[in-house]
Image 1 (spheres, rainbow, N blue to C red):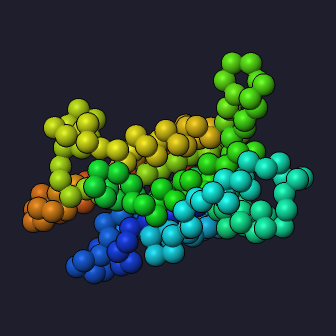
Image 2 (image 1 turned 135 degrees about the vertical axis):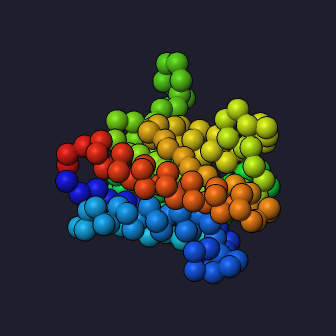
Length: 228
């Protein structure tokens, strides 16, 4: 049994905090996840996408025009406009597990990750739309695909978890979970480190807890993975 893993990083910091004092905690967590995954499955395929240092182009009017034009009717400029988005969607479709490092920037995901979301939530590719369809004119195209999403985050403050002191200000996990559920990926797992702006023992303890949770999650996902 081998799964294809799509590894996404979206931090603006290019270094791993395990290796650099001012590096990214989310890159540290995603790399730990990938390392543990490969150690358990040496033949696993990993697709790497760094949207933190090489962000996708934001959606524009020409992109929308092209995306909502039926494929058979698209002109060459439309196909060219969607080429990068098609590549991102192809990577997503090829993956069994998506592990995404998504730090909290001002209570939500980084703009570069939102641009990635906007490029992979595609009519005709990851969701369907028919204005004449009875009931809901939208439906998820990836439902039943067995894909699993792992979101690894970091936060400057603390208490953003469900039931926490400022949980209502956390728009990272809820927004990402909503977007993926819309296209049919509902098997969702999340882990976060906190106290980044505090540093010291509390931050170290939070990172240690997150790393242990990553190890446990990898083992759990591998144990429950479908036979391919």
